[in-house]
Image 1 (cartoon, one colour):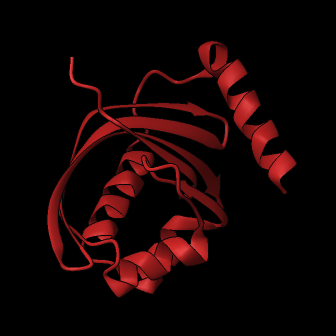
Image 2 (tube, one colour):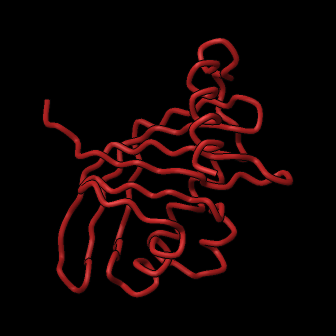
Length: 145
């Protein structure tokens, strides 16, 4: 399965400049917004609807979670977003695969400890049965310019 993911990711990156749609896909934009809201007020049903079973979720700390660990962290409050603002969002759709980049600024309360986070995010989405689902997400800390 890992080989398939990396093959899809590699093909999306390689074909992106040639095949990418420069206009935003309204259904993808809606999925990203629904995911943002689900990160703030998570339910298992919402998270399952928006993510693939093969989800790989990378944190800026280097920690990698599968779908079960990602959901558990949100649902238990170990990872708790009070608010999330996404800015500088760009997206490219290649067939049934898309990547979305954005800057995430958020207020957190992870495990009851208040904080703030500023991250550069890359998400890989796949369209299944007419619905966009998150396959992969990687975050890195925003470097001050």
